Amino acid sequence: MLTELIKMSNKYGAQSEFVLAGGGNTSAKDDNTLIVKASGYQLATIKEDGFVKLDRKKLNHMWHVTYSDQTSNREKEVLKDLMDARCEGEINRPSVETQLHDLFPFKFVLHLHPTKVNAVTCGLSGESWVENHLSHNVVWVEATKPGYILAITCKEKMEAHEKKHHVIPQILLLENHGVFFAADSIEEIDQLVDALMAKINQQIKSDIDLSKTSLDKAIFDIHLSAIKSLDVHKYVTFEKNHAIDDILENPSSYQKVRTSFTPDHVVYCRHEPLYTSFDNLQLTYQTYIDKFGFPPRIILLKGSGMYAVGDSQKQSENARLLFLDQIKIGYYSQYFGGSKPMTDDDINFILNWEVEHYRFKVQSK
Image (cartoon, rainbow, N blue to C red; front, side):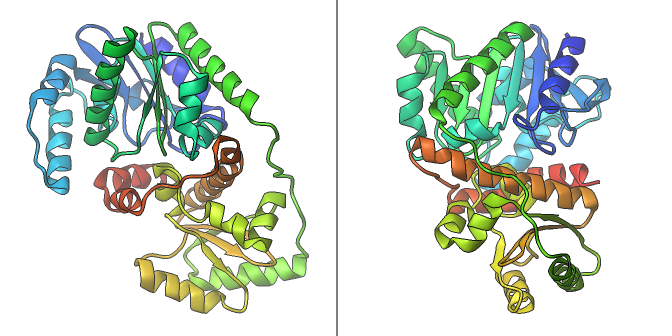
């Protein structure tokens, strides 16, 4: 079971259309034990030591516990119970979505954040498109707080769906988040993924233009030097292509990608880029810090390109990848009614959530 789980994890984790940075998680289960990805590990390279074994009886008991109504207390209580549900000898921290994995009555569960799937989940008419084009084994779950609140919401949705349609859901589409697939074999998981992607690709009529565009080297050197001078300890990665040029030149295009679509975008890119000109760079950079309490990870510099900034090269590269993903979702969501970003309340939850701080710290090393 573990061998198959690792194979499935590596397969999907290695494909950028499904997973970026440390996103996504996987699990396998029998009657007594759940094996789930540990927080902070990457699916593309995960091995046996990247998973955690948990006692399913203890996980089931968590559904019957009354946790605190106060957010920070509740999250601490849930985390403690998750850690206590680990089998003897386990030391890794389970994925925050462990309960949701255990909820499915299927052997394997695959959770991903595919760009084109999130064009649906972040689309204004995404829910109606799902209702009109997908089968009864698919459930739409409205945007909600991740972790325990998400698990409770999904449990209620799945039970109501099964009662209504007499079908156990195998696919959950989570608004402003991603997708869960569940089945008793890896082959069936693959079939579910392929069928969903085929339906979505039929709806999308054109691909985004991410072909590279050029910037005069002398100008680039000046701009890069100015950005590095803002904080000499930061690493910077540069990107310039047709889609970025459109965002820099067209305010309406920028507005479509200004705010995060999913928790991953908040975690890796912050919730909002710095959109500025070279002449105003220093002033707007400091204004951004004064407003939000931290520096930007994405700087969109007019007449130049996108600069992804981080405390390490890996952090900078992950910011670049995730903001490109945000741009793609903004483009592809036009085929699903236009883009729908996360709410300010949900963004602030992620910005302050200890779980995401832990995950980001581990994956940025």
